[in-house]
Image (cartoon, rainbow, N blue to C red):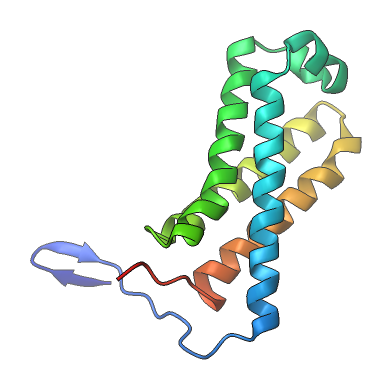
Length: 149
């Protein structure tokens, strides 16, 4: 970390080696799939009536509607964050931040579902966390997106 005019600035070394086309395609695929998963999950939690949602996800009927809808907003934000900053190249580092937040969200979701004995949903959480980890590593280290110039 460098200090510049009294303000700490974190300097990072990005991978400057050329990235293979296959690696870049794989990272984009993880971004698109992860984004789609989070967006669908968020939309379902936001727009499905609670009784219907509770039939699919029992926990949704046991917590306040506000909590369920909030989780939907968080999922939507994660889905948008995994893809939009990289696609637009406007503040693309936000993709890395979103991926880290999605990993944390899924760790919490795994703990939540495991504490309730809902082990059948954990494989889906593993898919979500896998996509987010690929994006975190891929856009954070392997193939960062350069901002618009």
